[in-house]
Amino acid sequence: MYIILEATEVQGGSDLKPHTKYNPAEDVAALQKSLTGKDIDKVNIINIISSRTNEQRQEMKAAYKEKTGESLEDALKKAFSGKLEKFLQDMMKTPAEFDAAELKAATKGAGTTEDTLIEILATRTNQDIKKMKEVYKTVYKTDVETDITEDTSGDFQKALLVLLKGERSEDCYVNEDEAEKDAKALFEAGENKKKADVDVFITIFTSRSYAHLNKVFQNYSKLSKHDVNKALDLKLKGDIESCLVAIAKVAESKPRYFAEKLHHATKGLGTRNKVVNRIMISRQEIDMKAIKAQFKEITGKSLRDVLMEETSGDYETALVALSGYDE
Image 1: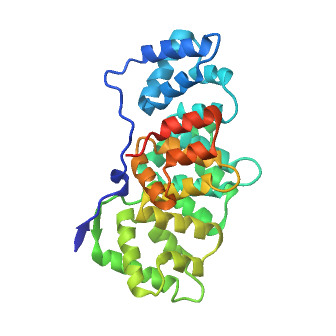
Image 2: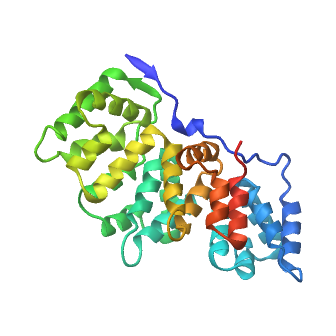
Image 3: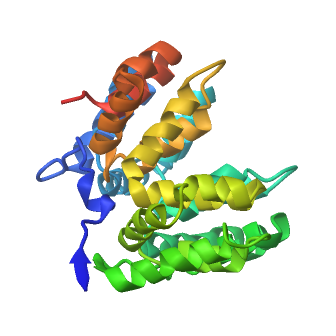
């Protein structure tokens, strides 16, 4: 028997609406004036960049280069510094360029940022992953698989390399019989064994559609006194557990997964700017409305209010402009 479940990706929505009859020349003229005047008009620059779609920002970049002979990124680098400069530079990248840069940063130097690898590879579509891999190869002259293989190991590495293939089923149709079989397979490979058969978990978690996984996890709760997250906690540990738990959360609700990450990144001592930037920029045109709704449900506060409390200065202005208002 088949049932149809809506893909979480479709449920999000964006506050950002493309400007009709967009004219990049007008933005270029306004940016030039704001960047080269006696006093740099930071607010105007932030407002222009944050209120355009990524596609429009790419047109803006090309038009700026053609008119001035200088890249817009270089002009922004001269005008800004610190957190705000990094934020604006990231906004000027295409989604594939941004993901490639984040993955490269997560694997180079001392230590690997496993959480970044998990977030990107567990939440992007197959097409997103394939585009990112092409950009990564072009920009860094190596395959992302090579860098991840060098910086990770064991079951975690195995799961990431499967995710990097970009071959997860994206079917919204769920075969209930198959979902029941997968639930039983997970139970037999985990709680019913002294030592978990991690390969079974990796295969099911990395290849099945999120709609299918959601049904699998519902069925799992009927077989066990634990939900699948508790089962993972009991039978696995380390990075592979973190990876599979993230996938389970994404299957349940991608917007809630991002809302939880934003909550953790903005509470306590210091805001984890890199996490906030990545989520705010990468989800702006996809499911930011749903993320904000989930954030408010989790925290009791609007994302806009929290960003205003936890950040300051021009960086706060940029984040707040991107977050928009709650409905």
